Length: 101
Image (cartoon, rainbow, N blue to C red; front, side, top):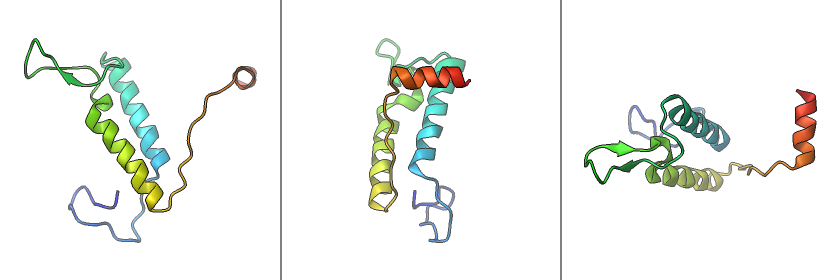
């Protein structure tokens, strides 16, 4: 992001910025942590309709976080970053990875 989270001001051009790929990895790690270690699963973060003020699901999978990640990707592309998209692994590649490890 171009804004310093501590000061709320624009970052200087010389300041190091994290890539979108790093942001995706951080998001995946947090989603996994909440899902597995804290038992929040893979459901999005929503208010429990039976208990107002209580929330269920995984907070890192909320609509707000998802929208932020999409927006971040767009901003990074506009800023000139080359975003690499993920692709599915075929059976042959999985076999090669298994044999390699």
